Image 1 (tube, rainbow, N blue to C red):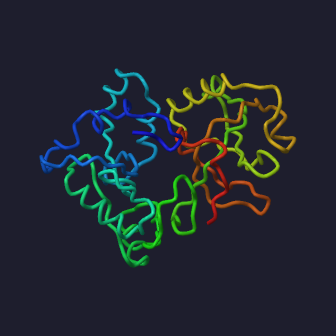
Image 2: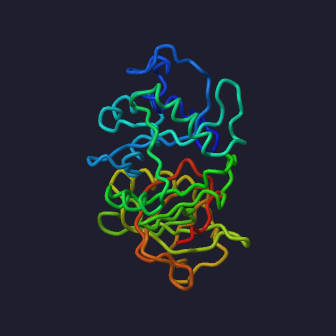
Image 3: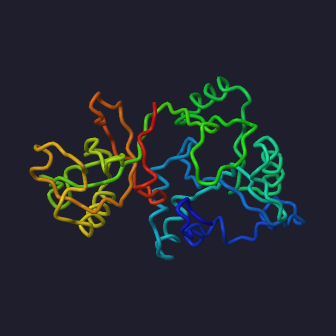
Length: 283
């Protein structure tokens, strides 16, 4: 299993990778075709919805004993989104509709923790069902589209109900009282043509564990100068600058006219993303 960045994450998810896929419970014992699939690892909340904050409890663990301890509390599943190769045949140039047939055939041989999410032919029906289930949105894909490796395309579009934004952490401000030993808020940026553009700060949404973990990570990244092209004087006055290579995700109400996030709330570190992958999302 490889993450978006290409890093090997096989050891992080034993429940997905330690079992021979041709012998998954409930599967066809004769199934053994080599294949490459694209999908997403998810942790489900009590209502059965993918929860990024829950997944954070797993995706940043690296030690075997930590992973083994957390697995019963935070099990994961693998949702299959696409089939790239099957039995040595490159499926990527084929239309999505044809790849979907292959994906469902592959998925039919696998039981939990693997699953192929349903597809809706009508966008309105998909949105209605997504809202009913309390999900974050839908992904609209042109059934004629080929698979574009690592590229964004207008053939695949996210429609979000909750606005989220990936950001690069460029600094932190000192904390007070209960946060005196960590930080008060993080200073956020989005890469632009001219460098890292300051888009505001976030000071809520952190668990005690996340505060301590982030502070340790950022403390090791300290630098003397600001990584931002420009930052307000009142923010820079007591800022601690850090190397801008840590990507996170926030939810927010809107962008102000001058491009600052309003009512931002921290969702978690995106260890699967690089700073150069971050861009401003369109609403």
